[in-house]
Amino acid sequence: MRLLKLFIAMLLTTVGCFTEAQVSNREPVPVLESLGSEVANIREQAARGDAMAEYRLGRLYLAGTGFTADYKQAAKYLQLAAEQGLTEAEMVLGYLYENGKGVPRDGRRAFEYYAAAAKQGDLTAKNNLASMYEHGRGVRKDIRKSLDWYAFGEQFLTAVHCDRFQRKFLASITYD
Image (tube, rainbow, N blue to C red; front, side):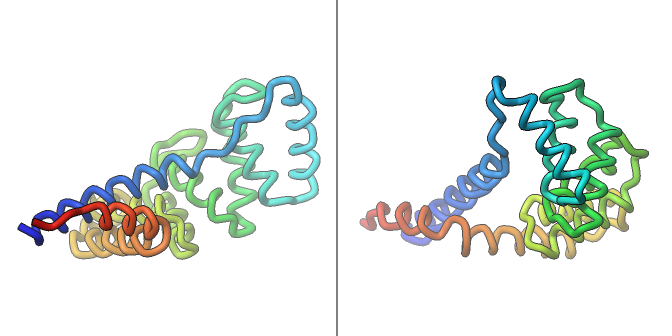
């Protein structure tokens, strides 16, 4: 019975941690009153080659914040940021290639961008790599590698991001 309770607790905390990690990747939305000047500032920084500004401009184009959504423009700025090794840009660019948004659909390139982001610790990229291996998208189907990527992402989440949450939850469990 104790083992079952512990297993359920670990399962629930892991699911809660994945949800928390996905929500925490979102950026704050600019206030509408200052949106025009903020976009202008981001454009200036991007023109100087600032990778984070290029990434932010790409995300604004994806969302259509400040102007009409344009996946091709988004891909252009995300590519510039990814070339400088910005993990967030590599992850989003992988998504664009996987889904053919603003760029030709290319599973192999999506895999390469996800792999680059995963090597730098991006949990979503690790999960996407696992899914690509699981379903054979962009790479040869390999369940073993899929499980390895899923396990690696879960281990990292559990150990780093959710340690405090897990300790609190596990402490609340009473044993009969």
